Length: 397
Ligand code: AMP
Image (cartoon, rainbow, N blue to C red; front, top):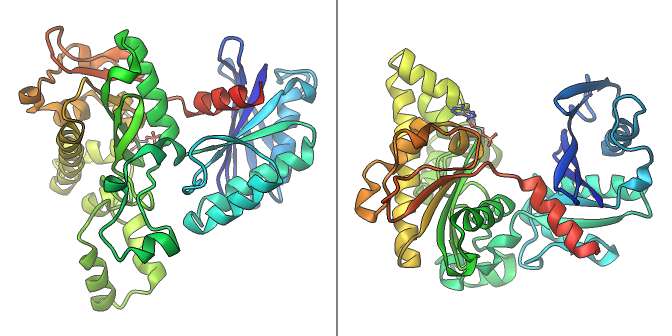
């Protein structure tokens, strides 16, 4: 069984072809600058790169080239397209309608359209990818896997905002949460590493990348998460401000005479690491400015981020009335021992003790806590594509 996983952005597309017999990735690729000048596809097979530079007017052109790359005689990994048994599509927002992955049919396409108003920046690109695949592979089954679905188990007390109730009933305003496939993957993997049944575990999962979120996963179900109605809530991120006093928005819109779009950009594109440090949205640049140039604002941006993660760990330990493991993943979580150490410093009172030497693990699954630490601290490289492929495989069987 071979599953093609597609993750479409507005001008880019990531893909992986996964062999489900052994869950190995046969090929992965990235298409950039779709519908713009200089469109480029880069496919990697066993570390070897294959690059196609060709005009791509739209997502259909891009997926046409993806399929051509996969069956390419020299650089491809399959002979015929009918070797692809199904396609799994990442869809950012499934609203309350989709608490699980679904086989895509006409009814689901209408449902996805309805969810678009909740994620106007993301869902349209996901839908374009689905439509392109449907056109090019009309007889292949497709599945939609949602970033929000894993968090649909969050209880009402956690997902409701204390706003007038009709904003929920009439406008769908509530916490949805994102990075669901990642939080799910590392929870399942953590239980395996611990040799425990996930149904008996209280986990705090920290997805720390350019976008960042923390989740509380109890008995295998998400019960809290830091992102909210949109991915803006929660932690400070690369360019997002995370949670702030909502009155700040009204105040700055008035004082700076900002339009809605300008205010939106300020919070989503000009804040976080970039806004505080003034250096970059990329953590490595910010860290280098702090360490090598003694840049105080860069250090402050890092401190704000780590403080935020620690605060969520404390809060979620209280929410679950205990915690068995804290798990780090994504760009920073997987690769920055210094950040993990900063976050875990002082958590010994909870029973979470980081082992300085074990904490040097980078890019691998590893236990980072001391042997006698009551709470395990783990690092697990995320694999959202594999979750999408697994869900797709389970549904089409
Ligand atoms: P992601 O969104 O998961 O790809 O994560 C991207 C973020 O991880 C960026 O801010 C990177 O600077 C950060 N990152 C990636 N590798 C490292 C590393 N080796 N050390 C520190 N930060 C890293």
